[in-house]
Length: 306
Picture 1 (cartoon, helix red, strand yellow):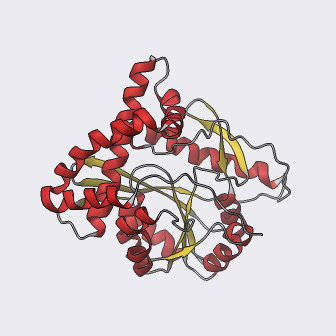
Picture 2 (spheres, rainbow, N blue to C red; picture 1 turned 180 degrees about the horizontal axis):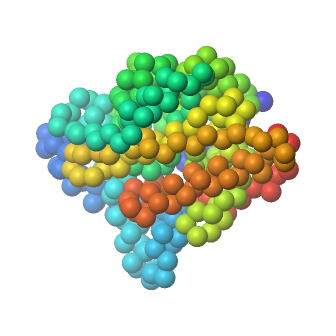
């Protein structure tokens, strides 16, 4: 059964066109300058965005007052805006960006030695799209699990379909059984599947500790990896400076079943390992966590037989 994933649309074509023109005329810094005005608007009038950001800010910056937390929300909005502008600039061939790779040689060895394919676990942190060019060097077919982009402005301005389809293929989580059948088929064929791991979007989850409280994280990627005996590589990116990014491949998780207890409970320790990695990321890069959802209230009490 297919499932429609509801995601709030933001932005319009005119707005994105203005940022594109700014990059061309004034460079990245000029485009960044517009963010301080646009983000002020979102801070004042987009209650849903502020509420989603506060869910994270309140956990990351505990014991702070109302005004200081709202200031941090504003800084988070600006940081995300820079990530979106960078993504457009890189897709458009803007020169001068430096990608520092961490652990990539080890990952290439893991991928080449794996009898099947592997899973790259991405998250709403940093700017994971900048890593796509690196993944191409693996010489594997790459499948991104992502919903069809239904915001025309975002689709056109950030080239979500037109650019990425040249490099990777798309598996929609809105397909039957959340796309799991197709993911399994591709991994069994030796391909790479990239899955977002930190938001449920209505799919079953396990409750793990994240930033000091219980949060609901989906376990689909871990279920597939344990069933197929393939590795999960946690892909992290972080903006270090104006045009410098860190792409970190060092975190590898190998879920497996021991056959002695209920499978869902066996997966929990691996989901917790992933949540701990994200927790450490939030400590290092607090303004590059773009979750914008209260995963702490999205806990799962469903009884599912695996």
